Image 1 (tube, rainbow, N blue to C red):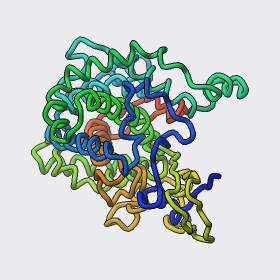
Image 2 (cartoon, rainbow, N blue to C red):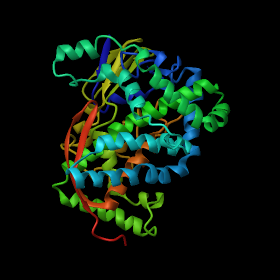
Image 3 (cartoon, rainbow, N blue to C red):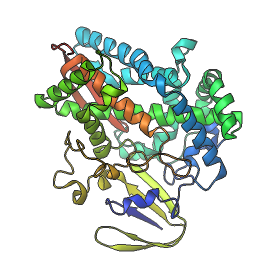
Length: 413
């Protein structure tokens, strides 16, 4: 038996570890082979009640904490500078620039630099194709509208899992990179968490490539999509640019954490994008016991063992929480919010007002993701007064093609 939670009152049950088990339900009823993850069940597929969950989660939290001071420098040198240089060059020569392709290339470089101080290219590697193939093999059953004919798509993508040997060499290439550059993190932080070396490396690979890299492949184009839709609203772009330059001006022209914290509109834009278009839309869990589940309008009996399914975009556009414009992108919705609405933003597998811990299933990189998203918008409008782009659909997210950028005319105060 299976039930669905679709409003803001019932959806949070999926985060209640006392009532919901998250063992092997990341993908719903489909579970990729552990041969794709070094024969280990990685942290995302473990329930909080399983002993290894706390060890792996603590290891990942410790890694993120140990590298917090490297995030902004790595983002600027490995992502922002090369990406925008390439973007401008392509617009000049071709009249357009495919942001998704640039994002895919430089996001992986940034993550390697931010987490380990060594991007793939610095070690002479180009792992983008390896990472994309490995991701596709796991996500293929969730993809729709990739193949023109529905019956053919169901046959090729949704009927049987692809055999892991198809990406064995790709995974081995990724593993070799992480074993090499992640040595210090594994030897020190994993040991502190009581996690075996091999298991730590495979979890590090999964967290970096599937969670972080896979997430940025979707999130940054999504944010750009909503900003592009607002390109005719020159006031929004002008307001963001003004906010960024004013805040940075107070920091001697540097984009610092202090400056970023002054950018309330950018913060709101990022949260609004995460609310209306969460990177992971489907969430699942099995009932650990019998209980009564309440929605806005009714109450339902849930039996132990039943699967509960949540479609997040329904719950995060609940008009009883967000009002009559719940399905609209409102850039300043979260300005001055102080948590009143943020507690209903659940993209990270938990409320935005709470923190990831070893005792919950909230994304370990929750704060890292939000920080990078805010940095991206700030860097964009430090450079440009406005931009235009064509937006389409691509696999699990948006396809964004820049058609013009209006370089900043006003100097930073």
